[in-house]
Length: 384
Ligand SMILES: *Cc1c(COP(=O)(O)O)cnc(C)c1O
Image (tube, rainbow, N blue to C red; front, side, top):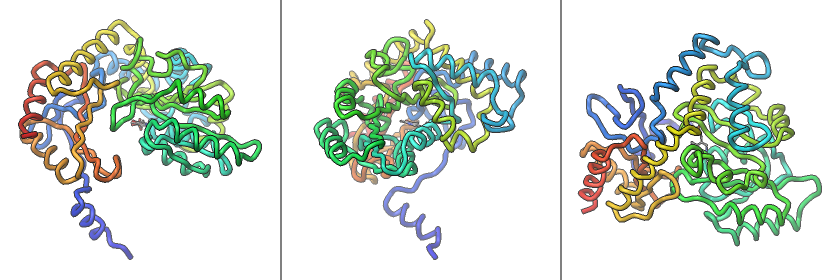
């Protein structure tokens, strides 16, 4: 039998071993680990909402009204008013007929893909899609194909070959993201929609990193380009820019009905705490508000100022990858940054391809000028 110790040693030897960190502070731009304080450039709390007083209050109010646990799955008796409201307001926000709230983005991906697809169908993913989309595709039993990142020619070649051999009554689903979580760039949605129509495929766009920060009112990439009628499924997560937790799949009403009846991560799981849904809903409301506009403006200013200092191109979202290459150097660089009081993780295989390890910097609207100055100084020192 394989013993766990030898597996751990192997991970350590190849610089792929990971450990959990704990902070003694509430989520924000400072992280405290074992008495040392770090400036946090590793969180997806882009709009600084994780510890926003209104979101806390919304959670507390829901706690008082609905209790802590939901007690059962949504299809049994776990649903409450906050669950219903987040679905209604998310559907309106994304301008789709309906939305379904899941415990988190991972469950939304796996549940949605597992409901749309079955054996005999084909799912075509961008090579850089998030692990949850890959896992959902695999679990669905559909044939899984990938195309090189944003490579439309290769996508079309796959679509053509799948269509040429298509059995009637089977589905083809294209999967991409609004902003890619480890590279920080976006996808050519309009061109993908043209292909989707030409080959009669379905399209799912995961807006985990674009929801809240991209486009007018933070509506994400699909809506900001007015393409919501051409995208069958939008996934958005509330654990990042919305400062809470959970995720929705926005779609037509009929697709939502099917997902409710087929998504195993939805059916066989206790409903998220009502306070979680209420917090996510408040996050969604702040995102659409004037305060949301101000926070996005500040975020944009922070990103531009940092990229100017470091001579980098301005990214589509708030993720700035600094590609290093080998895992050992990336790990060392991240440790050096920690010595300068900066928390910025080394992202390694299997999150990204082997040999494309990187320091992943994420910016928040709550970072101050001083924070950004310290980061750029530390990066320049560890460069030389
Ligand atoms: C973070 C993320 C998820 C998972 O969302 P959680 O709510 O953290 O489980 C799904 N898809 C993408 C693209 C993500 O970046």
